Image (cartoon, rainbow, N blue to C red; front, side, top):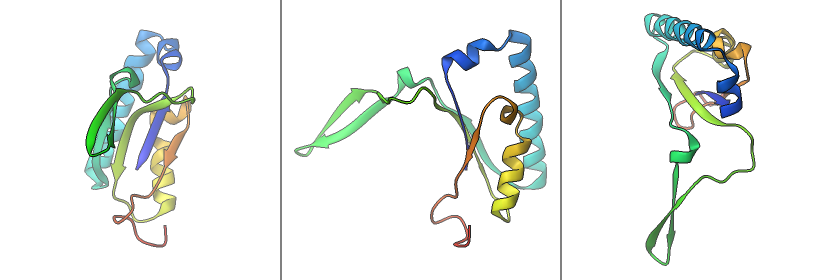
Length: 117
């Protein structure tokens, strides 16, 4: 799983035409992953202000706004790929247009990845 983190400050720092170009490049990158057979799915997630947390207390669900994390950045989108090796996953992350703006976190999905990753 390739995870892209960001924040409102980063997204708003991009000129509209730069954001449109980034989206076009990302679409092209995702199309290449589909063609190579490595794309499982790519998803953007809503702003953290729309996130809710559920915790069961004494058998009853308690829903709160959140998360209220201390980190400046939050998950903005993620892509799940099916590739042969960790090296290939790192190559795919480096080829993502967002890698020029920020870091992309790469993690194997448990129970899906080979045990040697």
